[in-house]
Image 1 (cartoon, chains in turn red, green):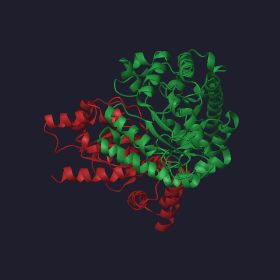
Image 2 (cartoon, chains in turn yellow, green):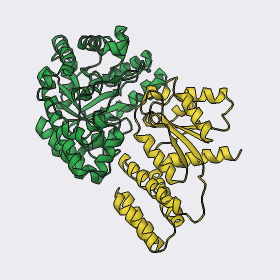
Image 3 (spheres, one colour):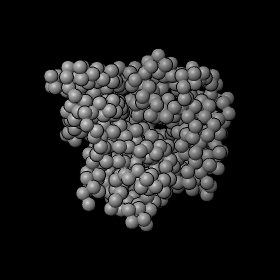
Image 4 (cartoon, one colour):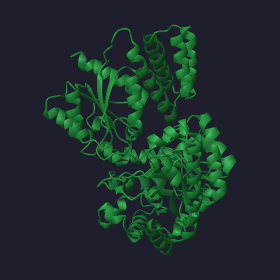
Length: 222
Length: 348
């Protein structure tokens, strides 16, 4: 029965068919799967399989990432309250676009994927000042700050990630809060994340989930 | 030879002194005139003067009448642009928030008479007077399927495009199509020669192939059929297009394709063959940090792949302001040197 649900869900995700995906998980519940099964044996493995295929060069379009993230987050949000025992989030991420950047699509996709992987997300929105990233991360007890930039000058600018890094250093928070960056300029220069003082970057939103999980483990393991 | 002659030779596979070189310097014009960006973009004469000066200084082959991409949103009612000191302006006000906004959206009958187009016209007049017929004047036109992202934001548009409601989505697409056709006519009438058809949603980096075939391609066909393919260049921003250019060429007759820097130039050339101009585009984001030698080596690599067989143009994306002057010069010197056709007698 599980295989049947997994296959129906995966097919719907690949077709970016939200209704069919929701139908697959609801049928699964009716047929006896638990909410935990849906999240940990259907939704998260589907993201992992897609990530594997992307890393093998069978790329996914921005539209597929967008829909997969939205559908996955929606399903997890619906399932978590139905868990038999309360489950704590894996970690906490504060997300926003860099100072001067008004492009929110990438951030929204990343946020969806993270929520689908049981990571709590605080979305600070667009054009976020560096200090606000740090203050929000401290307030939420977040292990990771995620900064999205669509434009070269907002990725490299002094008010963006560079300033977040400077504030973290100034407050002695560099071991407690890690910084991940993403967005178009980083795809065109794979070493740019080092230049702006980030700890990591991800080529796409799906990969961001994996990198963020590793950063959370790194912080929690200290 | 001048830039127009080189471009015409490249399109037709005719002999020339070198391949055409398009260098897209926009915000750098403000620096050239010593003006802040907001002031620079307030006058068409500023943009035209800087475009002419920069082309003269560096010797490349094209001129731009584009101020910034958000201009099109201004023509449809946006009244707020956000200017940064070190990068292109952003649309500061989305004009579509709800269903009624889409229903109420009016496409100007006469783009040429629109107040927001007057400075563009002033720019075009000056460019035409000083360089018309000698150097191709480029205009930027956003496709029907991409324009809504300037009016409602990329997030909301992606959601409406993929999830509907279909009738409202199609109503917006139809209005954007009407705008595209009228805008194209306005630019042609004012003297633009090269019309960059900007359509990231016509790339399978943006939408799945099935969606491209079912939705993107029919709207591309509709746009180009109504506006005409003359002077059109297919462009997906920095997104890749090799997976679709064969179909687009067959269905629309667009004669030039401005590839992504992430694309295999050889593959683009193989698909287009002698049917269209292939434009190889350098990764100009890396040019901010590369050495002069690295820049020259990359230009050589690209031209070595693109030049054989002709019908090749070397180009840039929108060059970031942070690229050092010496790297701009290194890129252009290498493009002129390795793109030369005189010594090897090749057709352009």
